[in-house]
Each structure stands twice: as structure tokens, then as C-alpha cells.
Length: 204
Image 1 (cartoon, rainbow, N blue to C red):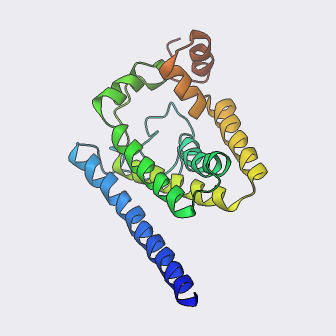
Image 2: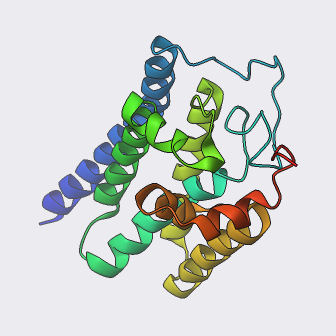
């Protein structure tokens, strides 16, 4: 019996180590794919910034963090939260794998022509050419951070974090995961006008 328990523990440790290696490789998969597809390594401005404070800034989605970083954090948070609420028997390793696969998958799929064109069809993303390699990898890392943080938090606190992330992004930056999804699926002129109110580049 003791040998059986020790074997299960060893298997779990090895599984977590394998997933950790896969998670790290995920960053290289994203970086390599986007670089081969022609995305710049860093912002074409030649600088590397920690934070870009406006979604209308030319450096948006080109540096380490911006307002869309909150959406990527939320991605990880939602995996942990939904896993806990809908599939409470799922092990950590399973949710971790889901986070890795969806994290890699989104950063790659986001840079297909179909998705890029879909983003460009919304006024707020006109001229969007995708992320820099640095930004895409950073988004993946932020997502993983959101997943680990949410997995360690109590459910009520996680729900509060979801609300805080969405409301902060929506009312300060005028865009969020929910708003981005809404405007891609069912554009609403009133929402677009509201978002454009803080656009310093809008026509007079």
C-alpha cells in the first residue's frame, strides 16, 4: 500500500515537472511562430517599455504590458475559476494543461489573417497588425500568472478579481475582454462612439 502511494506521488511530481517544461516551451513556440510569420521581435520604435497606458497608443500590443494585459490575466483566471465551478474533480495538472494549450493556441490563432482582419473590422482596432514577439510572450506569461493566482485564491476572491479586471479595463481604457468580444461578434455603434471619446487621434 505504501509503495502504491509513493508511486502515485512520484507520478504526480513527474507530471507537474513535464507540464512545467511544456509551459516554458510554450513561450518559445509562440515566439518562434510569430517571428517566422514576420512579427517584429520588439516594437518597431526600437524601445522596450514596461507599460503603455492608452489603447490608442502606437505602442499598444508592442511592449511588455498594456490595458489588454488585463484580458490575458483574466484568461488564466477564468480557466481556474470555471474549472473549479464546473469541473470540481479535475486535478490541477489538467487545468494547468488547459491553460498552457489555450495560451499558446490563442497567441498563434490571434495572428492568423482571419483573426487579424476580424480585429481590423472594428473601429478601435483599425490598422492593427498584431503583437510584437515580446508582447505575445509577455501576454502568455501574464495569463499563466493569472491562472496560478486564481487557483490559489478562494472562489469569492476570484470572482471579485474578475469583476475588478473587467470593470477597470472597461471604464478606464474603454475596452476589456467582454467589450472586445462583443464588438467582434455584434458591433454596437453606441459602444464604438463611447470608446472613441478618449481617442486622441480621432478626426475633429
